[in-house]
Length: 325
Image 1 (cartoon, helix red, strand yellow):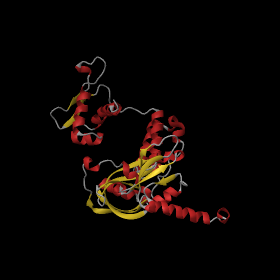
Image 2 (cartoon, helix red, strand yellow):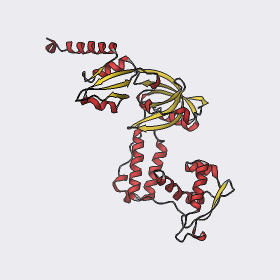
Image 3 (cartoon, helix red, strand yellow):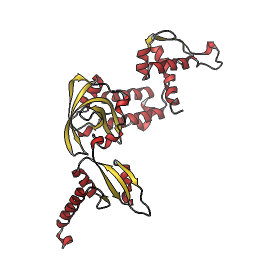
Image 4 (tube, one colour):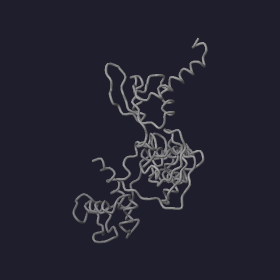
């Protein structure tokens, strides 16, 4: 049932769409409506059985689409116009569009601004109240404005060269990427793409792109089965090749497992520390990460990192003579 509202909304919009595009090819209609040709055929069959109360053949929506590559509406049963947004629905949509603009890179700013203007005109500023009283914020972009280059690569289906800062490795690398889509995660914009160097899907955060350049070659297509899950890429762009470390985590900072790539190996007992296994990028990054918790997270099987943490902690204490005296 989770897909029912989406299909219902699509069915309600289909008759006005086909009335506005008489004789449209099924392939074009499927692309415009965001479905596969097979799903479009199923929707048309479903729509063919809908109509006014009474439900005799003369009351049903009539479509000319069987054994044809095109679609025409011969009887609309009164569904001649798309449904109108209520003021409440329009307000929610406007807030969502403005939030996407604020994130930057997720949507084309010009297209979003045009959509906002159309919604406000269609519903009316008076009906929208405070939702339209504030002008939309200018879109946030990466420091050097590479957002537009990334969108151009997606739109033209071209490969992309990136100079990218990886936080997990604390290093800058150069990548050739086949763009797949743009995602918004926790208020940040990411490019999801196939990294040719890593031979897998990676997520590249917009504000960590130092430079982006379109290449004079088409982006390769990658089957969904090849893409796998890109969720791990949020924590680093080379997860499969990164080292791991076991950690003892005190209960008062156990929340860290929800925010970092840490699997709980042993939940602990009687208020003792839990044991987790963490994927990380470099010893330098791990050292800085653990120092920030003041001993409440300790490495189990990384003696070199443990010794470096001890050395830096001692050096920090010696910076305060009154404490070490």
